[in-house]
Length: 525
Image 1: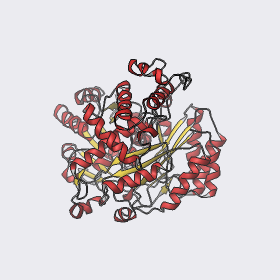
Image 2: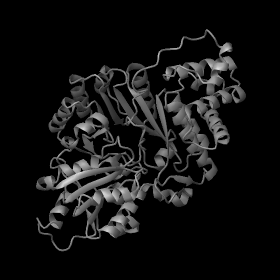
Image 3: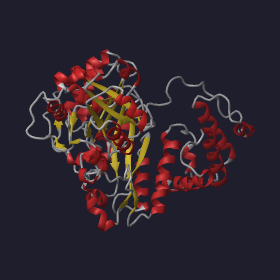
Image 4: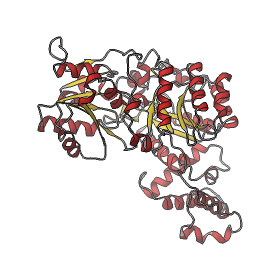
């Protein structure tokens, strides 16, 4: 039985906890006395506690993140009620700031803030009596920033099952040079890089073991162009069929030296997550976000016209001072640049971030519950924020899903603002269905048809033709009865394609789970 159990509640099974594997890899001589046990947030806290205690650990280390803090609180409370002798140690971004106000911190025995790669091992050695402690171990320990050359990389801790079935998170660097106030990485200065040769050697071993999907969590992958070129060159030279690489890119930094490497890759092999967040200069200045908009547009044009990169672009609704009209203008501008996905995030007030300095001036009101999203501010009332929240959800279902490629342009054909038209559709759809989740595809397709014909002035034949094409491209052979009934008006206009094999598209996490640009660094310890 292990003395040390490392555990967390993942959003889904497919996500292999990066932070826990860092902690395990850096335990040194304690490594054989430790084990990782991962759960999903859909499991009950009592089930989680039973599984942990069955291992009879002396120390339980729990990774706490914005997506799992509420059920993890219940896990901690149960652990301390059932087995008070077990030492519960917390770590992770959600408990690295504002510790004095958190109930979960109060209930746990100890909390380690910051990057705990090395500090957790020191704590365990002291607690287990292997190393002498300088007095009692404090309730809250602040981990010093580790030297990345001293941190053992965690990639050997990925099992064969992880490689075959789960998302593999990797990182070549930590930190961010920018100070965007909504982002946890605004606190991570300076940027620090792992030694390049050992990192590439670890990537080679993963490739040789069959890994094909790599999600880089670096905040600014293209900051150091020479390192970026070396990494892309490594994967180009070691090309394998099915290879998929996800990077977060600085939007206005794409020099010629990097463009050549990017252009080599097969369509769909690269996915760039590009944080635009806002096109309003005053809003960006207010939150200390630096961005060259003209260069950003030029780079997006290059990526869409000259490469096969899948572009996932981020916008944030609710930033201080950005009106509904201003956000809509930015959305239309971004849509015109042609990214395959536009992720509309709702502003969050993550613990420790300086976005809170605008609370009084802009009357920023956030939910007290994770994920701490904006409820209203001085220029967006609660009703408007709710409309934007529904807009974001329905945009995911209709546009980002890739299911309605032929139909989507019809939704705003003849209207000056795609944002305005899709917002109107969103309002109508919610009034019709009364929900934003668990909507069957056939029901959504029928609703879109009704909107196009009844509210969008789209001829019945055009709507039928587009939706029929999209239905078949999604791999469905048999049309829904209502769509079959519409066919006489559109017969002979298309040849139904054969169903496609494999995944519908490469998801940014290969799972449907979304990271907001504000919380991506939470995958680290």
